[in-house]
Image (cartoon, rainbow over all chains, first blue to last red; front, top):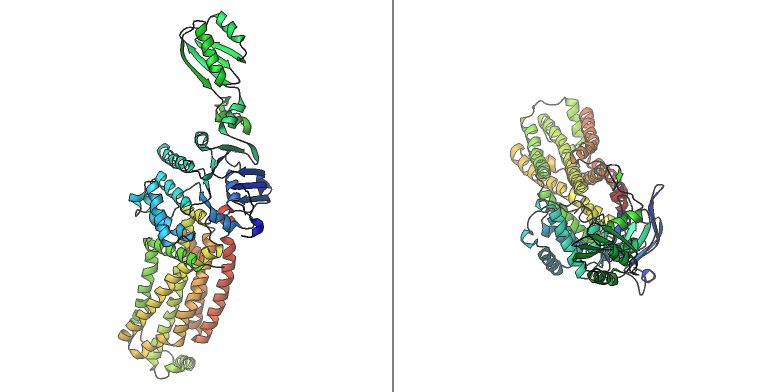
Length: 324
Length: 263
């Protein structure tokens, strides 16, 4: 690594105009991005959107056609070897050596990362215990369940204590139980404060883990926190379920209130669109109680990340040919 | 710069996988047993007819050290000399089998994707794989050769046994064999990067044995025996082709190739 490639006061990941073309087709282009240390950043997009290409560019596995990228201040293009020392990568498939035991798989990668024998043994035990695989350490990886294989692959990615962990669709091929196990492992890593780049289709997973989300489809379409993305997509709705249908007087009175942007009544349910649910919800409750209505329940409904996803990516989902 | 510790890590892992792959293990262990048995049986049980006097004269002219042998012993010696081919076949076929299983296996489990995300250079990865494929073949051939010397001494007597330690055998076993092993690995790697079945890779890779059979047929037809010098020249040529092939292999094993073209 040269001094020129080392930046000061740097984000953990930084890209400027990064792009990669295969033949005439750009897989990703004009990617400008900065990730802070300790941030969990999710790349969301449909198949073929360029998520995996982005991960491969940022990990120095493929060279960009345009632009630049730095990881922990190291130029990904001019010093990919140094970049690979600082990253852990979980590929879409676990990519394990199935005839080797869990311990042997980790030992091999520990050697590739140049870990001394004592440290290697210490890290292997620590990670296998962390992922509850220690008792199966001598078993061949090929005999493991999908969830166990994925946990072993995560352990492998963490072995050398990487600065940035890249997880490429970590739960895409897993059954619900295995996916749960892997998500729990990812949540643990987030609590440890690791910088993580997560490429995923799974909106629930992204919403739970990511500090920020980047929507990708050939280029970066929008970046923000899941909460702000949801809040920005549509105004929240406060829903009150009453014991009896509201009187017309009550409806008229509510429509006059400043915090009410729109109001709809559906039987005994009142749906009030508001701009600030935090202040509007108690106000609505007071108005309803003040008019003698009995409230069975009251809740705030915001736009789902799924609806944001469809909106940002310009997808109109259909069910049996009809809009859903 | 190639770091020996990284190459050793690759070799170690490859060898661990080889000893746990029964099919591959059989492909390594069985040939040397046949390799020792066949030459002895062919010579000991083969037709004991003498060769025509002019052929014997030609052979003795080519191999002055055979001058003390009887015409029938010259015929036996000629037959034993032909079994040298087996010691060229083994370094050709074993590395091919290992390389095919190793690379196609990596494609099937996509295990190389994790490896190339680690700080290892293409040259280190390739060197480790090549050594792990060639070393078992070379060691096996050497062990089989040692066994052949002992068994030939016991079964055929010292006069004929001496033939298997003449310079042509030494050049073959210790120089040409490893060079053929290297070329075999290169061919195995090139083919395996394009196919998804190790057996298909091996079948395609067997083209490497055709020139070896060519050697064999030429010697039989002409009654001319290649000298140690000719074996060494052949080894130099094969080694040069193998090294050139390794350079091509570095491209085949480039990260982008593995990720975008290995399917």
